[in-house]
Image (cartoon, rainbow, N blue to C red; front, side, top):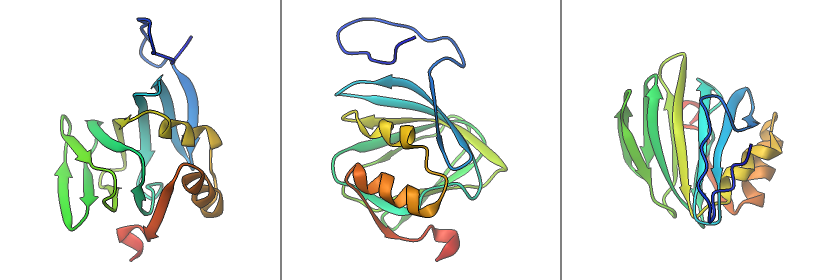
Length: 146
């Protein structure tokens, strides 16, 4: 099973992909390419990232299950099943799972940042180091902790 998409077609069945993690969240790598990264994420309330800024990539979220508040700059956008949200690079952002859990596709361009989840952080210190390794600056706590 491959997730490298550059130059050749491929398909993954439901549930297939490299299994990665972020705290207790389940991350399934669907595609990893210099141009694009795609992760299927199942995450619970409390495992969201702190407020952060990407130097190199834009992010898109397509919500498959649950309810999420997406925080980007000064805006908060409510997301329900089928919502599609864009976070441009250079703008502080995060999200809050408002249901018990949420499942979404996380898409980043260019690719590369999706590999942060291969570091599988389990502590705040590990998460900060992982984000830093991928040129992602933490600029504040998660809104629930502010």
